[in-house]
Image 1 (cartoon, rainbow, N blue to C red):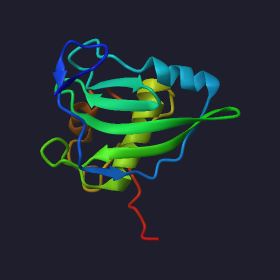
Image 2 (cartoon, one colour; image 1 turned 135 degrees about the vertical axis):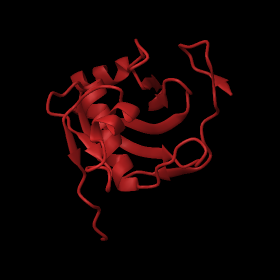
Image 3 (tube, rainbow, N blue to C red; image 1 turned 90 degrees about the horizontal axis):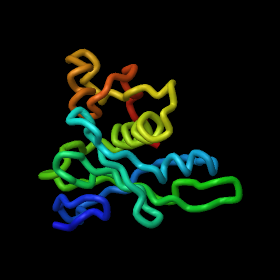
Length: 156
């Protein structure tokens, strides 16, 4: 277990089982400052602890400290872009195995929690739309946002 720079809590080491995600996003300089600010939980309802460490924006579950997503930011003339993104694939730490859903969820976390975009819509995985979407959303994010199922991924 390792310490985070801004927490006395002991957190699990980063996962060795990972899957790269196909996340293409660009950020203005102002948006990058919002990303740099991260997100620290203020209440038990806050499910994510997000912080920038070097060039990496790390998405930890707030209660367990498990690192679920990581995004590498790279500079470009007008701001920054995602150079790399991955998701934890250790089945004891993170249960999802759907890369398309994980990419949609990561995009949502960035848009809703960090950039505070008012049009951010919480993605639902396949099969979840009919079964208590607000309960699922609360489990994942802890806050209320508009909900929509993601489009099924198409084979290339």
